[in-house]
Length: 269
Image (cartoon, rainbow, N blue to C red):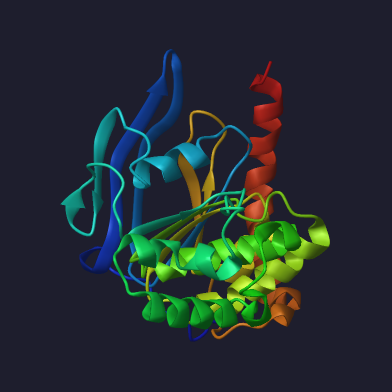
């Protein structure tokens, strides 16, 4: 594959998040086994793996929502000590506040930081425009589709001005057509990001479209068994997935993931 002009893979010295030999156990079950992962500033890293392999557990460890049993985790050169204000998390469910308008949902993090009302409104409107919801600031979450609510969640995440975004299958609850559209919308946003991103997905297509690197995780106990650099040119458009390079990347990831998925089906009760 010809190496295209992409964002350079960051060195450890420019890392925003590092996990070294991280393991996690739940009773007799080993969820994660000696995980090593570095996420660079400005780098988009996706993890794919079979169900129950520990992807979400790892994300929650980086978010400070779970402990790890061994190894070390550092965020912005500091040992992990719990949730931090510069880490934004996007879950599968958008978790919008139904009694607040879309604008006020986006502005919530700014409000918590003591930002004035005028500045909050201006910043929220800018972010709504970024995610294609400029006309919906006065609407309420119940008036929006699932895909639109997830865009609100992304805008709210960006309002935190994070240096690290953790996304746990953010489009998993959407129908296939909406999911594809949302992937393309997120692609436009990704091209402008300067923070590190860890993205959990079951969709190889999403991972190839969005990422600088894709890590393939094994069946439980979770460990990384392949690291795939996504050497596709940036800025990317949605038609990049039809390119021979993208097809080859998809096939490489799937050939590894397919075997792990079969193992999962045989080990689950």
